[in-house]
Length: 152
Image 1: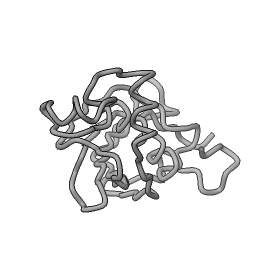
Image 2 (image 1 turned 180 degrees about the vertical axis):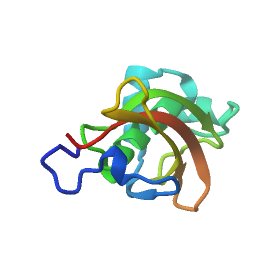
Image 3 (image 1 turned 60 degrees about the vertical axis):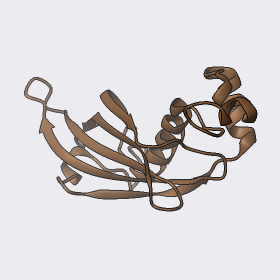
């Protein structure tokens, strides 16, 4: 995570509408899917391959919340905001299931920047983060409001 002493840390005034950030990749495997699901989303289509084949997903699928968690990790590593990536609300949609064997990456684009009128040391940055699999297929879109601070 970027810290105020990190010369790569980005502040509100460093950002512009249209800026993009592309993450590294994360490969998902069956063990990760099952571990996450068993702890946080224990549904048969995330845990059991036979049950998953007979579900809407027609095969083992990662929890959408697992995809969100991976996206967050990739986002934090690729968009080095000073003082961290602090959420102030978000909308999420899943275009297709994330599957074991998928290699995910995230492309984030700044859609708008709104300086705070009541707190001049910060603003809200609207960021669209699209998570893609190895084939370039969109698996998730996260549009989030992120708090960003000015240099002190």
